[in-house]
Length: 86
Image (cartoon, rainbow, N blue to C red):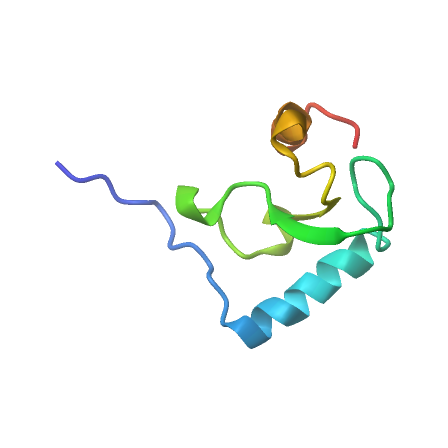
């Protein structure tokens, strides 16, 4: 038995993704949502694409390279679950 996802995920074309990436950075004030840094910013998926995460504003967050390190994954998981005041 094969399970199907309830809704198809949104995966944007590169040009569209560039636009939404800029909107996410603007929404987050061009700062890391975890530590407030303005250096080495990246737009990260809260729910990864590999886990059927979508390229939507609600699934994207601005983080710096340091906060994306594996040692900080617990904080990111808490934010995704809505239990962190990032």
